[in-house]
Image 1 (tube, rainbow, N blue to C red):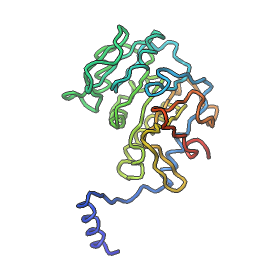
Image 2 (tube, rainbow, N blue to C red):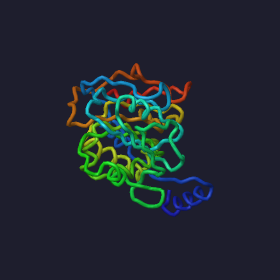
Image 3 (cartoon, rainbow, N blue to C red):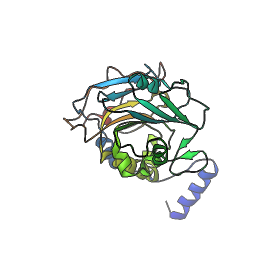
Image 4 (tube, rainbow, N blue to C red):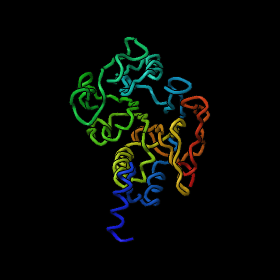
Length: 265
């Protein structure tokens, strides 16, 4: 097809609400997926929070963690409530609600969205941490579900603060966009930054958002990732026990098994 014909077709499709781009080479997508294969780091996983949405699997390595930062509150606070019972205080932030579902002294709430800069309803993770724990140097936990803003937050996080987190639990959105070359660079850069300091120890697809299939590659659109700081544990090899016995549907009846390309070679 001649270049001018391609341009005309793209313009016509754009006018109809469609956008045509080159695709990320499947080999690049598969290479990133393989880097994110969960590792056995010799730590049992425990479930913190609700048996469904609001519950996450984390390494049983909580001793010494005093604080968790938990942006993205919505209507569920079971994770932070459970941590409070374990004597871990949480800082919560979400400008879309006026308060968390559960109110108790161990939970501190800010009506803010987490973002890449301090502006209006947005606050950076560094500013948020400095607001309450400016000189605190101990290990921290992060549980983040912020509807796609996680990438900009990760890429703008100071290295020293990122290294201070022992455990990360992050729900990553729009993973089906990995086939868009521009979005692939954003998502891959975010993951590469985390992989410098952390091992992936668990993955759990959010079944309510479905899956994209392309040849041998299957990508859940939304997926929960659990990481452990490499200073805390070494990898003993890839995990293959999926689903984990403690996994549960985010919404009952929306089960989505982790595709084998994410944990099997």
